[in-house]
Length: 385
Image 1: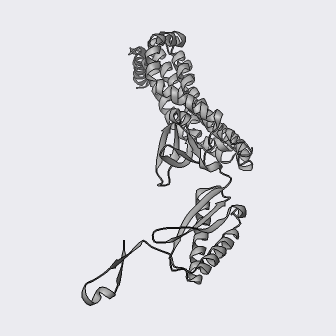
Image 2: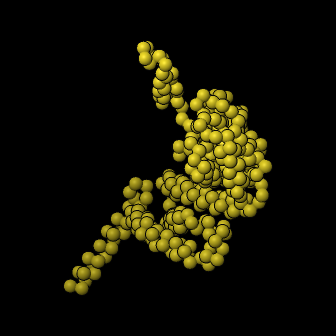
């Protein structure tokens, strides 16, 4: 019985050995099995490795101590995901060496791994450039010059584009392609490409012109042709302006570079000018008192330049007496200007109510003469127009 079992075991072992050594689709069976087990194990380990990297990132003492450090900004991104994939891909490369894979299969296998490795490496470098951009943005915010505040986001975007392009070329190079020859071959279509991309090139040069000439800063209130709003971002191709309707206008930088830009944000003072119409029935002494009270009240606002305050009766209109109110506010934002202007205008209304000065509205007086007994009488009718 024992001899029979021993012979059966030997036969099974021999059959198993033949099966494992038999080649199916380029590789022996045992290599297919080992490869499947290794790949399955790698995909099972990936979330575990990602969790470990996440714990290391979360409990990093440097990031906690220095809120504006490079590592703190870098760890705001999901950097543990590409790191885990890179670790798993390196394990699969080690599996390739251990199994001594050969032939065309190993070529395609390695190409696939190199593509994934390159993609996640580019992703990590991309995050690193973003983190460095935040660090330099913090440094730029501490300087008096505003040019570096615009230059840092522009340079960060340019470097990120360069990272993606160079990474893609390196991946192609790892596939055995001669990238330099490929780029030289594209020179035949360079002229057509340049003609097709001339608008893009014009906008790019416009971006450089804006950064060098510095006609406005992010946050400035600008007027360009019939467009008006606050600058939100200066990009490669265009500048985004937030209008006072809360919409966003995208203006090509080529247009911004050649058009006249009225930068309202750099005004040291902002003029407020208003014509107040009061009724013709207002006595002269009350007009003078009204002007004096309004002039004094405006000068009490700490943002008003007192030397520029003008409040005077300056003209006769069809249905009102014109009082010119003009002054300059030393404010830096549109909302702040509106707030102080509103406070001053409300104070003018209070003064008018105290002095019983009536504001005029458009009126028309018509005189007519009737017949008979009414010849000696005049009737007056006032119609609001």
